[in-house]
Structure formats: C-alpha cells, structure tokens
Length: 137
Image 1 (cartoon, rainbow, N blue to C red):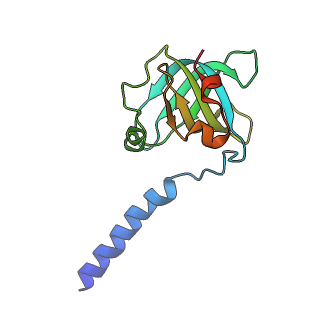
Image 2: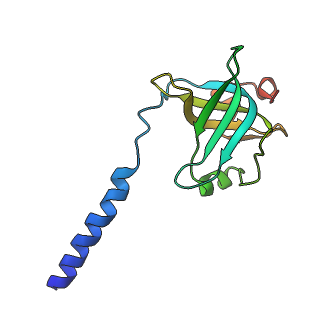
C-alpha cells in the first residue's frame, strides 16, 4: 500500500507540470477580431498548437506585414476541416483572429477562409461578417 501511495504521488507530480506548462489565452484580446488577407507564408501543423503565418494587410491597412496566428491542435483542426495538406505555401487566404494585447503581429485563430472560399472555424456570419466580402485576394 505504501508503494502504491508513493507511485500515485510521483505520477501526480510528473503530470502536473504538463498542465501548468500550457499557457493561458489572456494574452489575446478576446473582445476584438481582426482580419488579415494575404498569402500563406508558413503552415505548421503540430501539437500542442498549429501556426498559420500570413503575409498581408490587416483590416483596411496598406502595409504588407507578417502575422503569426496560433491555432489549435491538429486533431481539433481536422474536426473543422483543416488537415496537414489543406493550406499550402503561397495560397491566398483570409484569417480572422483575436489579436495579441501587446500589439505584436500575432493572434489566436477564429476562422480561416481557404482559396476555395470555404470558412473553417467559427462561422463568419455568426460573428457579423459577410463571407463574400472576406474571400481571399
């Protein structure tokens, strides 16, 4: 019994670090949604978070800049129709995201519109967006 208690205590200590290592989403301004239209620069499909990097302009801006958008895990992306080969370098995409609070060029994915005009993630119309106006450039 004593060995079982020690084993359980050790397992708790070793697995607790994983839970604490995962960051909060407080760094993102969940009250704002920004939209970037541009060219897919990089797509990293990996655990624990995938990343979508886009060269483009945010909202009605004119300066092309790189934005790195944090997405969820590959399994959660697959559930909304995004697989490892869905996004290809050079694709024209539109990405909606919650921006970082500190103003750096990054955010948390809300939805992405692929070159075929399909929205993946939150439904744009549920957020007040007109899908036809968001088609990739």
